[in-house]
Image (cartoon, rainbow, N blue to C red; front, side, top):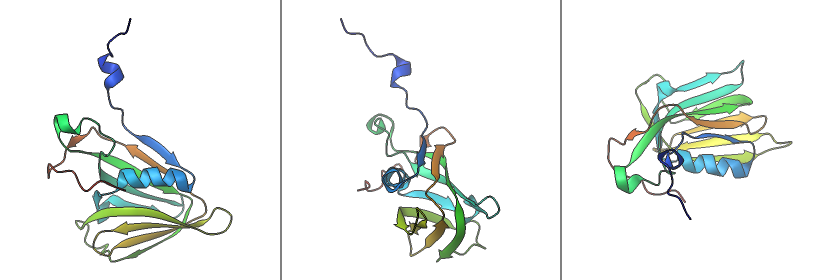
Length: 156
């Protein structure tokens, strides 16, 4: 005899993921593709060697999209073991500047170190020199209906 699934079994939980290698990073990169944020949502704490962005990420993992529409969720992308940060094409004085994350790539160096490249729409980019890959992505709010009501092109 089979039993119907309960409501609790069908619920979608917030994401709380970590990445410590290139394979893990691919998952986080896919889940953050087309995330939007402002320049004010970025934080670089050099003493703690931590760089963080509060993202409005599209919920690519949402299987109920046809039922309730496209959703986004606020998520915290935290990169630890950061030795340096450089940016291109971003006016950090304009705190309301809206940025869109296209991709996250890792360029390995020696002994697990390397550069993390965050490519933004409109020729913007962030390059983070890291001692090792140590990244977390954690949803911090309930999902909300995407203002545009549309699903961005699906990540590859």
